[in-house]
Amino acid sequence: MEQISYKLAEFEGPLDLLLFLISKHKLNIYDIEIFSLVDQYMAAINEMKEADLEISSAFLEMASRLIHIKTVMLLPKHEEGEELKKELEGRLLEYSLLKTAAAQLTPRYKGNVFFIREPMDIGFDKTYHREHDKSELLLAFSDACGKAQRRLPPPATSFKGIVAHKIVSVFSRTIFVLKNVLKRGKVSFNELFTRPDRSENVATFLAVLELIKSKKLHISENNEISLNDNAYKKKKSS
Image 1 (cartoon, rainbow, N blue to C red):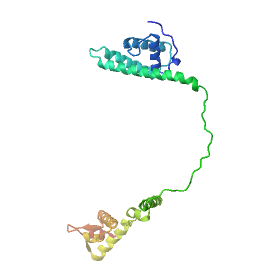
Image 2 (tube, helix red, strand yellow):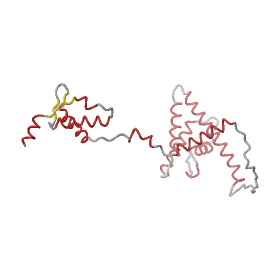
Image 3 (spheres, rainbow, N blue to C red):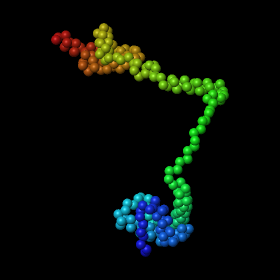
Image 4 (cartoon, rainbow, N blue to C red):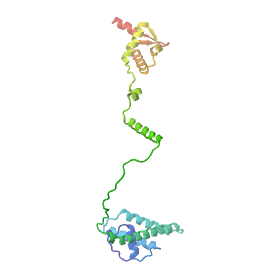
């Protein structure tokens, strides 16, 4: 095979290298001998590696594409290989035309070429002439008011359900339960929860549990709450 001599900097990409190889070995770009082109391209890649030149991923991707086309065309039914080869030929033809056009245009626009129009005084009427329907104006006004409202901080009523609940301490409900039991002797469990205040009922329930746990109160099977006699006698004797 003929020795290939070139510089990597001369090629702007894998298509540029392929065009160089096609021109150098006088291949028909309209019907490329894919097996010959693959061998030449791989030889070029190997010479790049031997010269310790940096090979971009685009060159390696084209190498894998060419090997794939060559492999497919070795199959008994190589219609896919023919289609891939035609696609490659089309890309090379398109790139060749663009490269030719670029070579023709470069001398004309080489260097610092600027196209600047002279400043023009453009006058314009600032009067708003468009006419709007009343409903359209009302809709625009409502929308503007809505945006203004959205920028305002939310009213205090928005947080009423979050932070406006009355805080009821367990200690206050403990005193309430003890007063009722001392005054009446026995109190029905349900009588302690007559008000629909959720925080108050929770605090009352916790107070009853704490008093029963500390054995200050006793609850019967009928859900009646009374003083624990043993605790009362013990406290009286002490």
